[in-house]
Image: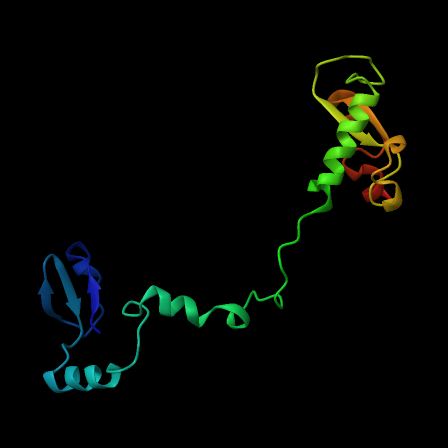
Length: 155
């Protein structure tokens, strides 16, 4: 296909190339296709789907399931255990046991967190034990040694 150039860049023409035709305000370099060549190109493309002509649903079906390069073998989305109903119940039990007050500074009504005394990762058997939880305000919680897995990642 002929190369498009802007009219202002006519001075940058390559040696031996001439302007062949103009479409709107665009000039084209090189030769025009003959009618015979245009017919051959059209026949070669005939019957072959192009992305622009393909329907979106057909495109989607080509990459569904195991045909998709991101396929992980049919793994379902599993709910994380920290979002389970057991952890929500555990938090409420710890809050009510500690009377909704921070156990370090004694403040009531601030942003309260329930902190696992023994790590969630290292002690899975103690995850839902009320005795393994303590109510802390956000500032006191950030001062603990295993806040946001700090101790786990530093080891």
